[in-house]
Image (cartoon, rainbow, N blue to C red; front, side, top):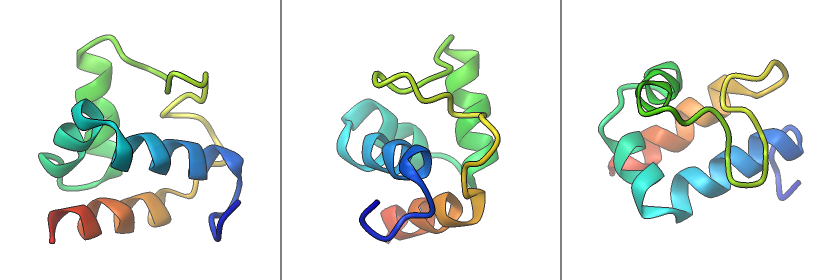
Length: 72
């Protein structure tokens, strides 16, 4: 999946970086777990494609790195 660990991680990263509302939340988060908590507080638990943000199997380290790159 374009260099990502799996489809689910790729899908979350895609939405996180290409959707303005998710990007804004990501850039306001220190890491991926905080991003997930902020979305959950808004009642959002999955991408529009049906991938849960808190599902097992996501590569959290890759997603943390994606958030750091967005801040630059």
